[in-house]
Length: 218
Image (cartoon, rainbow, N blue to C red; front, side, top):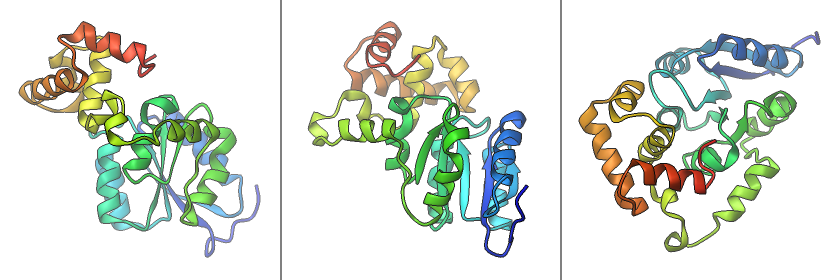
């Protein structure tokens, strides 16, 4: 392992609820001499607590956290720590969340499949204040350089509505979604109604058909 000068190292917080993945990311980072892992977090609450007590330059943030969605956590980090770069990690392909994450203030977006090969360069780039955009994300951005009126219906959904749409398309009921997101059934029902209205469809089957047709779920 290379010798690290901790005075100049880029400090990184790894926020993901899977211990095996955190261990793998830490291993990649610790092989370099200019990056330092200053902590790990397995929930949104733990991530925010870390940031309030121990500074860093970059957060690796999973989109799917157990207590709060990563997109919501991203919004809080941007408000409380605007100088910290957030590199989003996800199992979801770029066409599902990349553009939404960048619009929400993320400095970059990596799928977990591509992370091992691109992680170090991505961290170094976002730590300088730049965006890290892979060719796949660049392609998605190009597709979205449209007037708002020309945007597809799903691009007009809020983050929580988009989440609800994806869960419904995956076959989950309102009660199951409520449990997953730690929300009331009534609240999720409101999100579902908004999704139906914005997509211009009538039921859950139509939501699933729309999501599959637009490659928004696997």
